[in-house]
Length: 332
Image (tube, rainbow, N blue to C red; front, side, top):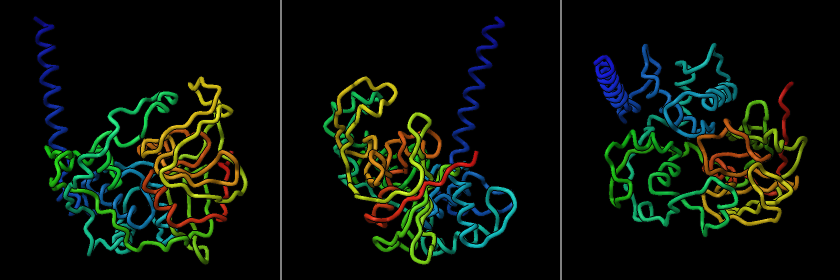
């Protein structure tokens, strides 16, 4: 009898928790109206700040309504670039006001409606992406696994967050109107405007500078690993490849890969180097995208500089061969 009572209480608690979680799901209007008031809706405000940072090229990584190191570092870089002094972390009135001004929030709200197209809904998609590296070579293309993943990446969003803002919506139905992050840039940079790059190993950040050493963009990055550290010193961009195939070199000796012969992995956004490869003069190293945008700045790479696909694509538009890339060492 006691066990039955305990089990019943547990079941009720789980239902209550589920209901509470559902009640706390963000609504688009909460994000649109969010501001650093007292007390603010923290998730709504964070989501709004993430979109504004994205539009000013101080990238927060994946837009998911959650404050984390990538967002904090982007805010710190934005404050430094705009001469804003503040104490502590999180959002303050001065930073929010400047961010909204630079991002053009008054004329371009942070959320917008989007009508799903036939291309969005129909693919072609790759139903399943194996985790084992060697199994990837058996696929003809490493595309998105479905329309939700495609749409989330198109608007720089976490897939679960996209679903949270669009409860009950069918992402596979052409003509469906959904709410998405309005990631339209406030002032798009000129093609080839980057003059130098810095890969900061301590901050897990890639910074792009233009004429007169102006800061054009800041991206969260995964830079190297203990298994295969990123290079040191200064190197140069040598080439840019859109939608690249990936060639595995057995000399890399990646953990879990048994092949002693090179093999190719087909292109696609879920390719190990994502949708873009920016080749460096250090053989075997580059700046590239990723199939796992939510892990940027959190998990190790295979020695390269890994960005979200959309950040890598943006950078590829601004950089050209010959641009120097300096790797800044983490302080011991």
